[in-house]
Length: 451
Image 1 (tube, one colour):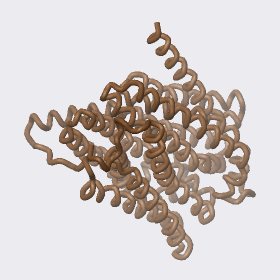
Image 2: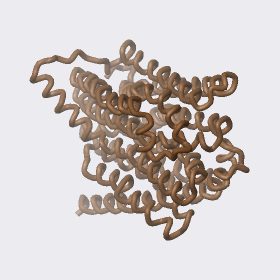
Image 3: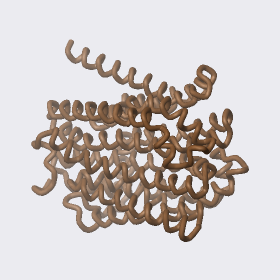
Image 4: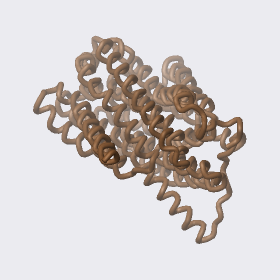
């Protein structure tokens, strides 16, 4: 890579990680802030019904975000290994293939949801009372999801290209636009839920354009390349895309975990506590992407360091980056858990008045829900490490464990064991059990290496 880019092969690992982590974390939190800002304005403008309606839309949004993260992660791992071997052209081809594939796959659900908004709302679990709000939000927000997927892929490429501050600027610009446009459209203009959706759409497009302009005009190394249209080239492209998706699939499963969490939570809260329960859970779900993005920022900051040095065979640097990432995960997990346990009233009050029924349910449940954040961040970081060294079996297995195998039974069983508090504890139980399995696998593998 050029001299003005980040040197992943020789620079101090801890310094490298810090140089990547703080811009990546700010950028990730900026992405999550877009959704949270919507929730704050919606809660004070439309009320808890608006928050519940937006929460109904979240599962397919999480899945498309996961698609972008899957393709971006896979592309970044493969491209970083190519760069470590001096194969710049191959790295550029992988980036180009990733963008084309992301565009095609994302377009399908977007078109279907826009063509059948009422059917989509019912399929996602909306009640008849919430359906008009869900439909309106969907029609004004879903068209921007293609730009969201492009940005998710682009941010990986930009960080690998040695420009983490550009990636941060893309995300923070979108968040800043969203604050202003939410206020403008929902209060002076009085556009309600439609205003929130339109503001987020415009902000998504704005942030994406910064990332795309960098890749097209200012990238140091990872520019787009012209693809050949011969049968052999198309077959090679399909093979490369398949390999990228296999490497990045745990990232998709990570977002799918959020989608399952929200979908199952909506279902169980609706069953036990009705629309107010979904509203309370919706407030928690506005914060959950922040927690995921903290883990994701740690994993993505460590990924180019680990992948590049893994490609070089520098195992000592790989282990040092792994240790730094896991230590950071533990510190961040304890910090956010403390915030949710000590300040639930303040966190809930950002979204709705505390005399609201949904607010009272959320304040009571937040400390239980927060019990899982340490394990949540640890698991996201651990899965990211396995992806970075191309160990797809454990990465995929642990992603499935936390997202499906353990989470769904937890939601179905915990309410019967601990009542409504059991609903809040479903995610912590699934994440804690997964963390125990991750640590068991890690120490078993380490013991086998020693023997």
